[in-house]
Image (cartoon, rainbow, N blue to C red):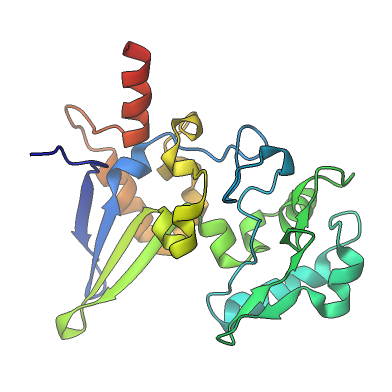
Length: 247
C-alpha cells in the first residue's frame, strides 16, 4: 500500500455565535511559510522566469464581489505616477476588463497585470498598490483586490443541512488557480525555499486571517494552535527539506 502524501493536521471547532463550524489547516498555519517575492520567488508562469519579478502578478486579478471592485476603484484614484509604472495607460480607464463570462478582471499589459511595476521602474518593482500603500503608511491589503492579499490563504464556505455552514481555512493550492495552476512550473507552497519565515503563518498573516475570519475566531484559532502538544506535524515541504539535509 502506498504511503499518503501531503499529510496535514486539521482543527475544527464550532463558532460560538452562529450555526457554523470552522476547520483550519493547522499544519500550514503553524508552518514558517513566508512570501519570498524578490528573494527567490519563481513566479507562476508555465516556464519560470524569476528575472521578471512578476510574483503572482502574471495574470489579471478577478474580483470577488461588487464591494471588492468598488474598493479597488478608490485605490486606483489614489495612485500617482511615482507609484505606478503604467499610470498613463491605467488612468485612461484601461485597467479594468471583462472575461468571456462577463466577470470583471484587471487587464494585462506588457505580459503581466497592469498594476505590476517592472524591475526597471524607479518607484519600485512589484504591485503598484503595495508600493503606494507602503509609502502612505497603510496596509497594502486595504488597497489591493481581495484575491491578491488572500493568497496563499484560502477560505471556503460550504452550505450544509439545516442552514449550517462549514468554513475551511487552508493553504492555497495549485488547483485553486483553476486548471492552469497545474501548468505552473513553480508554486511557493510547493517549495521548501518559501518555508524560511521567522514567525508561524498565523502570526505572519494575522491581519489577513482577521479579515477573513474576524477577531473572535482568530483568537480561537491562535489559542488552539498554541495548545501544548507533544510534536506538531511539520509542513510537507519542511519534511522534504529535512530529509534532503539528512541524506
